[in-house]
Length: 318
Image (tube, rainbow, N blue to C red):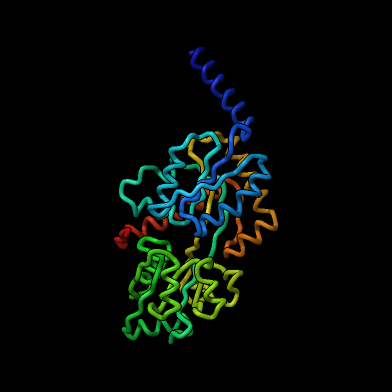
């Protein structure tokens, strides 16, 4: 018994020394769980240099895309819990457990939350040449039994799930057109080939600004600062409907609490940097930050909400 207690104390002392030495051992890796060019990659790169200055250690962004972010998240879940490998994830992270059979990690048990970077509205938009001048026009068309379809970045995307939930809850029988990403979706919207699209502000706003598409509504509880004149679905009479896009930083689950606390403090310092805030806001992101527990509670709630939607409506991945 004494030997066991002594071994435990020695282990705790070693872990404490290890945490105190962090992050002097080696460069820190931010694993962006989507390919270069998308919002996850850009968010990771916006954070990397200020984090490097904050931690006085090199911070490298490494892209590990595929399977809606689950390949990169799985890589981080299985990485050494030493504080040198973190994941930058997107809202698909909360959908993957329900959507991908045999996911090789447990979202709630194998990854620890560091920080909720922020949330962003998704925008429901229509081509500038469309007959729909408001979301109410879309609803009127549906009630008249007209066929209305909408595009998203793919089956099982948060936009797909949000529109499924909105439609089923309000007897709005629109049809889903899945695309292989935001680029092809927006090209079809600009060309008038799909009457409605749903995507993050990051994807849709440049085309709103150019006058090629018209915003009808946003999916967050509050209006987007980037689109202040666009009403929320809640304002339009759809209860407390809320479906935000979001980004977060995670670590392997067994990362020492002291390192999680230090990384969280560094993240909060970075996200209070006016230049970083400006860059994130330019992506349509409402910066949040806060404690690891704030991030954990938010993510687990998202897993529960969208997992239920996937199950209730039999949604399948591509």
